Image (cartoon, rainbow, N blue to C red; front, side):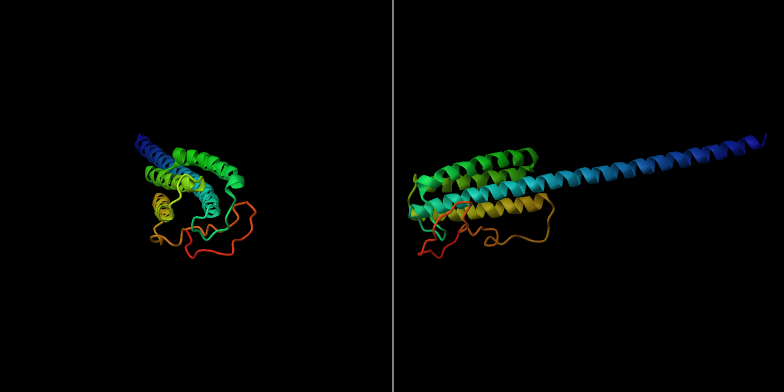
Length: 195
C-alpha cells in the first residue's frame, strides 16, 4: 500500500511537468506568432507609406515642372502645361490609390500627416493648372509642402519605432528636377531655389 502514494506523487509530478511544458510552449508559440504578425503589419505599413510618398512626390514633381512651364520660379525642367496636365491627372489618380492603402493600414498620426501633405500638394496643383499665379504665394506653398512632407516622414518614423533622431527638413525634399517620366528640353535659366 505504500507504493500507491509514491505512484500518485510521481503521476502528479509528471502531470504538472507536462502541463507546465504545454503552457510554456503555448505561450512561446503565441508570443512568436504575435511578433511575426506585428512584423508582417509593420512591413505592410512601411510599404504603403513608401508607395504613398513616392506617388505623391511624383505628383508634386510633375506639378512643379508644369508651374515652371507657366513661368513660376523653379529649378526644374519646365513642361508644357497643355501636354503635361494629363500626366498630372494620372499621377493624381495614383496618389488616390496609395492614399486608400494608408487609410486602411496607417496609424492615425500618419494618416493625419499624409492628409496634410496631400492637401499641400493639391495646393501646388492649382498653380500647375494656372488657377493661381502669384510667385510669392507659390513660394509659400512650396515651403508649406516641404514642412508637411517632413511631418509625414516624422510620423512614419514614430509609427515604425525608428528612434535614430529627427529628420532635417532639407534632407527629405525631393530635387524635383527629374523628368518624372516626361521628356522635355532643359531650361537654360534655372533659379537657385529648389523645392
